[in-house]
Image 1: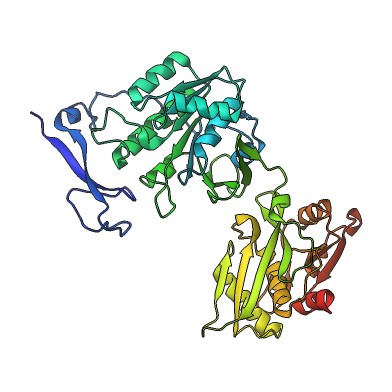
Image 2 (image 1 turned 180 degrees about the horizontal axis):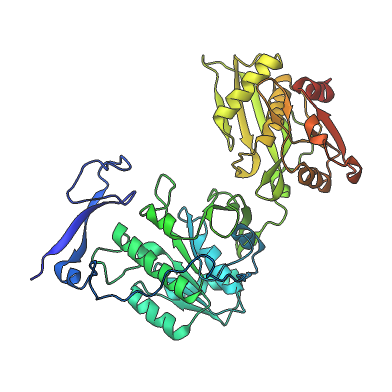
Length: 458
């Protein structure tokens, strides 16, 4: 009887070792190495060796001038948010990985997408739910599509036989952790199985020009479960995030070989499925019936999309020794830097004050253009003077208290004008080459923080 070969794989990063180790040398995780079967001696006998004639090469090397290029068309879905995040639609032959927390709505998003592609044959492969469960979800979504096929199977050899018979135009796999390849003897969800199953779907996608979308689980740290090589294999990595107890969901891309990685899609979870939010600024700005101190509106960019987001600040006296600096949706280190600028350059005594900052809507922002809005919100709460609700801000703040220019200022001004704002505060340097006559909104430019505070608070 042939002796089976085993190795120890890290379930966190995919590192393999011939013997068990208590701590993974690659990711420093404890007790993450698990023994898995990788191959037997009989399977190795037919493997390729250098100089052997067992395998004939399928492709021949070409010079760069011999390769012809053709413009690749995209499969446009009826989901504008999904198309925007992908860069314009599904690219034939692409392999897309969608990750997210349990219960966030990944399967709902993919089934809704499958039902909306009425001009294509779509195969939805489910290894987690039965046909009856998927039928109940489809009824709740209130979508009908006679060209959407459901297959509840986990064995990849059986799946590819059905694919050969059906010849679908789009394939959705839910999820890659439930798939099992007969070439690997370890159980479903192991590092070896995930790598092999993903490699089989990748080979199929490249050879057949059929886009494959795979749902992936995430770890408790928030990263995609399985080996890191899984993210390197796929063409696009999408993250579906949000609070399960809130209505809004955010679709981000962290890797995209066919488009930008800075785009953002926003959905609202309803009883009958996910609704696209075409104007996210409306949900990121709360409707206030009275003027409240500590609130300002920032004009930011997510990819090519301008957004207006509400910045909320609360400044109170520290009663327990060391003052707290807490932020939600904003970098805490940058907040501390801006507070130091306000104290040094603006004369605000914040050393004995607790400062809390929140970005409304659960959004995580990195655009430095919201610096001015953060400083204004903190100053407003400190002085207990409300900021006019008709004003918004788009500028970066330097360590010297100077107002610095930001990119794509025309798009930010146009978005603010469209939402009904009467005045926008920008940097003096952004006026270079800007045609103010195109806008009806009042544009106030400044070089220092003091000028902004004097204009707002007198």
